[in-house]
Length: 223
Image (tube, rainbow, N blue to C red; front, side, top):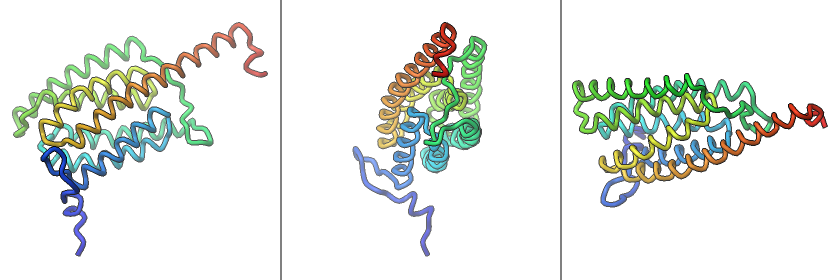
């Protein structure tokens, strides 16, 4: 009888002397598609992202990255929330028309404080209750990724900077666990995040320009 779990955990190929499982390949493909779609504000990034969460949950449990595994479950819940928000206002081509915006001062301060506190708390919990050998970076990836996903759902442009920080920490973290394909994926994520920041910044600038033009010449919007 076909065993799906065994198939997903089976070796697909080797990379830099480490075995790469089928589930890691699935995580690589769905993760790359998801982030690429986010940079272009495509709504289907959310269901693809949920598939990616399921793949990485299995992968991280096996690697002993427990905070990252828990993060995937929370990611899936936040993704459902983001999918709902983006779907409420979407064009016929599947592009979310919820406007890109900057975070308010309160959102930025609360985000920094919450990330710091959550990182410290999660690191202490991992240190005391699991066999994690990397509690602090694992906890940071958990806390910062939650903040970034929340900002992504609300199309707050600063979320790209948070994702960049997550990627910078994640690349050596996953490499240290022998998850080389995932580490390479996060290098790609880093590149896509820089591109996403550029694209969203351009849109934000264009939106502000249109608003300023409309304020000076209200008839422009109807021409």
